Structure formats: structure tokens, C-alpha cells
Image (cartoon, rainbow, N blue to C red; front, side, top):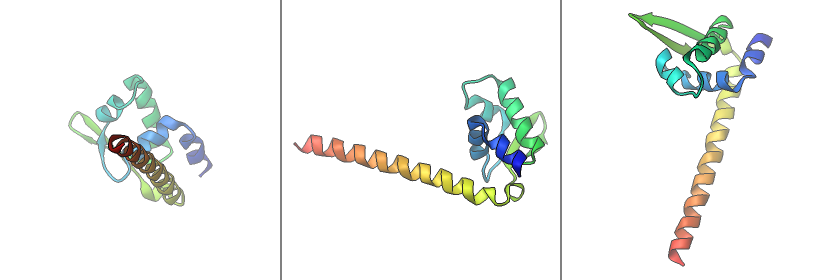
Length: 107
């Protein structure tokens, strides 16, 4: 599990893992989501794959990646909770901003 923790210390790899959580995503789509080279994303995907945190499937000329939730073991619920917490924070900020806009328009 230590290898997995070291791999997930990188924010780009965590973001990739979140993208492929519960669904397959083409390597090209993953690479297009980041402001780094496709080669850099390929290296991140290789690290995730070598650690067993993602599965890879080839279909024709395309490679698809998906998180291996079983391999994550006890890390899976912790990661889900972290991402859910961040989404809750974002929702609260958006709602506060909307209230401020509404109050400003009502004044």
C-alpha cells in the first residue's frame, strides 16, 4: 500500500484517478484534460498502471483506463470521501456567491 500512497502523492495522478473512477476513459481524453504533454500523462498513467491502481484495455488503436477499486482497497473510501468533501466545499462557495448576487440585485 505504501507504493500506492507514494504514487497518489502527486496531484496530477490523483486527478487522473478521479477522472477514471468508475468509468473507462480514453488515454487521449485524459491527456487533453491537462496542460502538460501527452508524454507526461502517459508516464503518469504508466505509474498508476504499474502500481495496479488503474486497469488498461486496448480497443483498436485506443487505450482505455479505469480505476481498479479492488486494488485500492481501504484507500477507495478515503479518496471518495476526500473528493465528496471538496465537491461539498465548492457547492457551498457557489451557493454563497449566488446569495450575494441575489442580495445585491434586490437592493
